[in-house]
Amino acid sequence: MEDFYALASVDYQHLAEAIDWKVWFEARQKEVGWRSLQLLDVACGSGKFPAALLSHAGVANATVRPIEYALLDPSGFSISEARQVLALPFSAGSEYEMTLQDLDCNPGAFDVVWATHALYAIPHNELKKALRRMLYAIGHGFDADNQGVGFIAHASAQSHYLQFFQHYLSGFKDGVGAPYSSSEQIITILSEMGLELEINEICYTNGAPLTNERQVERYLQRCLFDDTISLTEMLDNSVTGPYLETCRNNGVWQFAQRVTTIFMSASANFVAR
Image 1 (cartoon, rainbow, N blue to C red):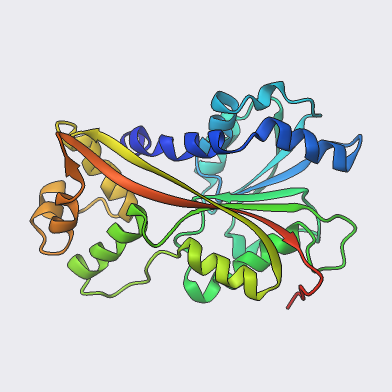
Image 2: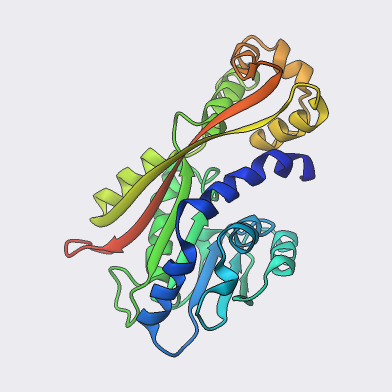
């Protein structure tokens, strides 16, 4: 995981720097008044996003009450890791060791629910259910006193994460297996549900010197959630090999990312189903 995040930590740094999160949190605090904000981090992993916000977004200086930071992840180990990186204004709150599809909370329980690089492995036939649980948690379209804000950061179909995984399925799995979900699919589902969306795109690369072969190998394995295939095998494969060759330029590995940021709010025609 350290080798993966040596390249992937830039994902969260770009998210932290793309928005004035300090001002954003201060605005959310004004909306709720004197009480603490309630926030849920979906598929929190090891807490790289809140860590990036603390390091790169100045949120530690935000004029807010301690934010009750709830953690959701199918892995109890990940939840434990994420708790350890939280620092003010984030204060560790409830834990949900489960998938988003199984989230059990009151409608409108949270002022903010976000999922940053968190929804890729949700099967497409379950994606709508998962997004509805996010909306339920912030009260949109449901009988809830609180109407919160949803935020998703997710790679597009043109991004390395999705392209490489699709090549992997073709090259190593005979095309069998569910591809990662894309930001385009998420936007389509949310739009069909009648949500008002604020959409932007961030473009950047994850990179490393060509000499860092072991680090890149582990990064690529983690992109696939498959540590049984070596970098040599990936390069020799008739499908993944040509793709990876396009990622080697001027002595550097460069994995191009296109990440969509999506803020969600309810519109008049949203109906919960």
